Image 1 (tube, rainbow, N blue to C red):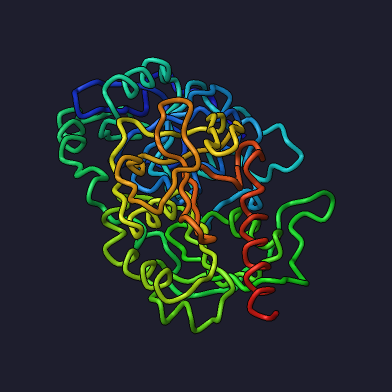
Image 2 (image 1 turned 90 degrees about the vertical axis):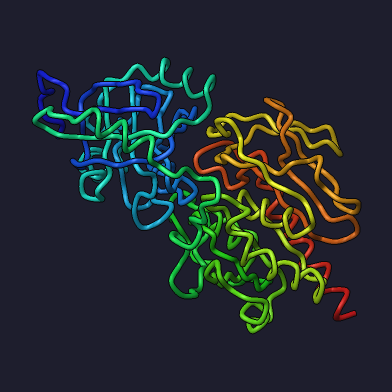
Length: 390
């Protein structure tokens, strides 16, 4: 149950430019330093906090009602929260959902994540949009005592996400098998008992719901760590390769990931599908470049246009880096583009079943407009199998 609100500020958010936001702390106590971003989704705060792509970031939620559905073990995208901290307008209320098993504040406290409420999130979001994603220090102290100078210094000393390989910090320690499918009433998460395709998924920070979508599309999924080599992958004799989402600078992760992807493209004809960081890894392997965005795309309402069909999809996004569409070489086609800022959101390799998207077709949280991409991946593997057995 939520406790009575304190009569004085118990948390403090400090930006590198010296801006100070006082509020009420909840969750864990202590201090954390990270990059600030904002998310415009109206639901799915638990999935957002446990999305490995948010490693190294404090998330500001623009929607004020955060915490009203509580938390439950089924909605975790990974074992524990990965985002460094949470910033909200209103303090979380007691849960009002039949699925809730724990109050948001207790859930955060038990997992060592700091949160602050009572913040003018509109002002903070405007600052992020106008000035770019700032470095920030977030502190929670029930006594209300804060060393502001030290917090400003900590924010300014944060190295930032450029040049930072965070995939190695959130990837799995060893390979594992996945067969759980998407949630459906009334069974919940049912197992895939009749898969038709063997897929190796490289875990750069994979969300569980992406793996569930692969299983629901008929895939028998083996997950390998981010450092997996070509030989590691081929030892499983897969029908297709999936490149997952993840955090950090794609150029840094690409140091070890890109050579593996190049080997797969040069030595096999298997279908390859990438999402988010996996999209950026594929673009780098094909000769493109990536760039750091001002404040990134984080939300569940981003319009993306399929430039080949003219179809517009409403998508879920979470990325602070983007593929530079001007850098794509001949033989690589841009397939999707953001209608917010024109940034690249998808590519494909001409004449090959090799493609990727920046947005999240598993959409957890978010709309289901792009789920067909998983089915397209399965169809490409089925076509390849039919061709090789004919």
